[in-house]
Structure formats: C-alpha cells, structure tokens
Image (cartoon, rainbow, N blue to C red; front, side, top):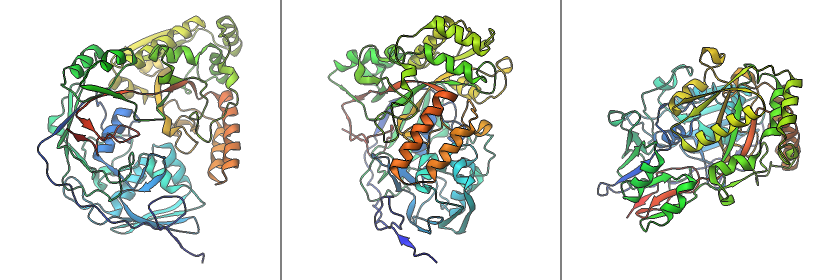
Length: 523
C-alpha cells in the first residue's frame, strides 16, 4: 500500500488532510439591508439547470460547496474539515461538524453524494469527474468517498459549481428544475417575498458558522454583516442610474455609457472587482442547419472584429475590454496567440459571402435570440445580426426577455419548433483559464453545454490535459486545443469584457472576484 499523504494547510496543492478551527457566529447587529440592482430577473432558481450568471450568483448565497476558489483561483476546503487521498485515486472527504441546512436538518455525506451526482449529470467538469469515478459513496454521515480510475483534479472540479442541497432535492431528475431553495449557505432565500420580474430577497442564515480564515473571493470565512439582501429588477438603465444617484440602491453593474455620469456623484464610487471579467462569445447551435456545418462556422471568423464588438459595449475605453482573445483567458498560463491571425486584419465581407457559398450555405434562416431587457447583451446581439446580414445570411432577430432566452436556449430542436441558431452570452474569465471547467470547449455532443458541439479531437486533447500535471506539457496541449478550436469553432470569441460596479459609499469591504455579498459591511 502506498503511503497516505496528509494535508497540513488549507491550500489544495499537495494532496493532504486539512483541519482548521471554526469561527464563532457573528454577533447580532442592527437591521441592515444591502440593496442590489440585479443584472436580470432571477427567472430560474436551479443552478444545475442553467449556467446563467444571475442564477449562479443566487446559488452562491443559498448553497455552499465542498471546495471554493480563492482570489488566486486555488480550490480551498469549504464545507470540509479536511480530506485525505491515497495513491492519487482514493479520496476521502470529511465534512465539517455542525453544518445544517436552512430547514434545520443536519448536512450529511449522502446529501453531498446526491448533489454531486445531480450536478455531474449536466456540468461538463462533473461529467469528466464521473467518467473516471468507480465509486462515489457515503460510508458515514460525515465521510464522502471517491474512488477513481486515474488521477483527477477533484478539488478543482467540486469547487466549480457543485452546490450541496438536501438529498430529497438533489434526487430530482436534472432535466427538471428544483424550485425549493434549501441550502446550507450564509443566506436564506425568502421565497414568500419573491416577485418575478421585480424583486428577490434573502436573509442572513443565523445557523451558518463560517470558517476561521479570511474571506478570499468564494473561499474562506463567509461572515455576513447584513441582515438582508434585496435584489431589485430594473431593466431600464436610465431608471437604474437614477435609483443609484438617489441613494435608493447600493450596488449596480453599470453600463459603460453611464460611467461618467455616475462617477460625478459624491455618494457613489466605481469598482471593478473581478480582474478576469467575462469572455463575450457568439455561440452556435451545432445540432441544426446551417451551423451544423463547420465550414460555415469557420467562414464567419473572417467577418468578426473583436474590437468592433467590444466598442459597442464600452466605446473607446479600452480599460474595460481587450481584443486578441482565443480559446483561453488572456494572461492565464494556458493562453496563447496561436491562430489569432484569423481574427485580425481587415474584415472582408465579400470574401466571407463567397466562403459561405462554397461551404454550402443556401440561404437558410438563422434565428438569433435577442434579450431586450439586457442592454449590453442586446447591443452586441444586434451587431451580430447585422454582421450576418452583411455576409449574406438570412437573419431572423427574435426579441425576448432574458428569462425566456435561457429557457429557450436549452431546446435542442429546430428553430421552427421553438429552437434557435445563434446566441450571444458571456463566459466567466475564471472559467476559461484552462480546459478543466471551460464549458465552451466541451465538445461531447448532447452532453455539452447549450450549443452541443461534437469534436472528438477537442475531447481527446482535454483528456490528455487532465492526464498530466506538468505545466509545460499542459501548455503544449492547450496550443493544440486552440489550433483545433479554430477548425471546429464551437463559438466565436468577441473579446474580454471587464465589469465596473457602481457602489454606494456606505458599502465597504467588498470581496474580490465574482459578486458575493458576504463580508460586506454597511456604514
């Protein structure tokens, strides 16, 4: 038997067992409410059913995870007291003592096992984990056992988006949405106060005992210093701006064209809390004509100027965007310049028209979904539709709200039956740093993220990346993946987008990374 390696710190680098002291719950404070202008209506509550950012933000408040990513994107134990691994393939995860769900029930290992299985049935990283798993079990109430066929970055996978829910909810078929929100996270969802299209509310969960460590993005001690968080849905940017200027809200992801106006207010400040931002993309439906044809997808690369698309969002303020974006987040270890010449130089629409005809495009209708209630996404979508028209494609720009769009995006059928052909969205920059959690690069057909590309070569290279821990070898594999990316074109990258937030000056100690509302204090 190989020697068991034990972790001595909370960091997940060497394989080991982490045991850390727990902090005591925060003392009660006078009633304080943090008021957020939401980026969109919370149309879907279930974080397994959709990758929508607004749902992910909601889920991080209500649910907790076994591991979480810190500011350096290193997975740290979160719900776990620690873990041990033997021979790189036999993992035992130990839950912290005293974890309880919002309904007062104790969090058990079998809740975690059921949650992992449900999450893994839809998540690309989770699917990869299950493909190498021989056994996933709960030997006792606090122990989760994972026995693998080969080495795999288990902490990174479980820190991705594997939210832990009670077994009776996690047992719900992943094709159906969970609507009862019972987690063990730092906030309780107040279902009775939800007004669809208008308002969502959360209360601090007094039964949550944070870790002792300092907060670091989604990791560490998630101490809550407010009593309530309220999300207000205000689709009109002018109205939202006026609400912020009047001091009637505390937090808003401000559109670039309103930055100058809000910057003049003495009661507000502007912050960019996520250094990696988002990667704007055009995602194809690979199951339906015309984008089931890779030659048609490749032809459109010659029509897209990343700078033009980013300028629609943030005009000439290049501090809020960058072009020259390939398959991986710029500046991350796996990023490279390979093949980027296809996105550079003058755009030649006449040539693209000819290339489309040669590829077999015969005027098929292209349904482009346009979410009118999200100003920035809508602006990029309208420009994309115009670019397609200039290339000679027949475009049907269909306007809807974001909630309808993400429901419809899950449909695999033809556009004539309520499906779609093209959609614009953003991938998290933290999720596109490497192949591990990169949902846009997963190319295993119907098991992939909406768009459902199929590429045996991308899948082979992804497996090879997982099979080595050597950085230089991984970087070489990612160069080959980016070459294959330009051949298969699972999506078109439009650039990297940074998101400024307008914050009321009474808001202090905002954690870096994705928007999280623990750790925040109000003056």
